[in-house]
Length: 191
Image 1 (cartoon, rainbow, N blue to C red):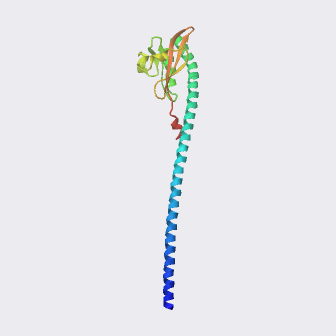
Image 2: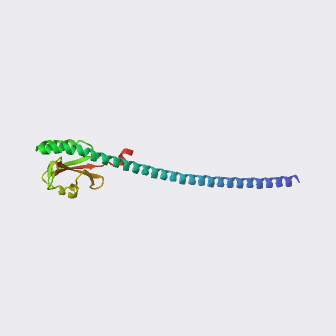
Image 3: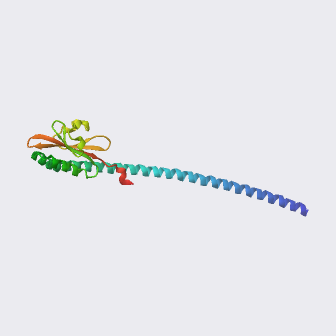
């Protein structure tokens, strides 16, 4: 009887150990599924946060760029007025060399590409680019930029702005100042 009881105890222990191994394996499987689910959820949440952050960053970059552009454009118009008066004085004296000196000095400023003075016939009479002197303004820029009675900003292409400002002698227009300005890419300030 002792042997049969021992056998019964051994069989019962095997069943208990089998059940506890199954329970252990199920617990491990459930734990792995829970961990993988949490990892996937956090990964999706992380991507969402990164995308939201990138959208906000781009929004603020665009907002800053718009404010900078508006401010810069106003400053460019204000900047052109005293320059027109200086060039007007030299034109009325007939000193084209002084006009060329003004235009060449402008080119030391960042983002200024070219400056020229155009007569009423659309011919470039002074320029920071010597090869343009004597050519028609329409060869390089839109001729309609010259038809203005006050300082004006004109968009050329991309980030190019052409500032045109008439040069008057008392009550008649004698020439027009044209300045080609290349707007800086806003992204260079955020790197």
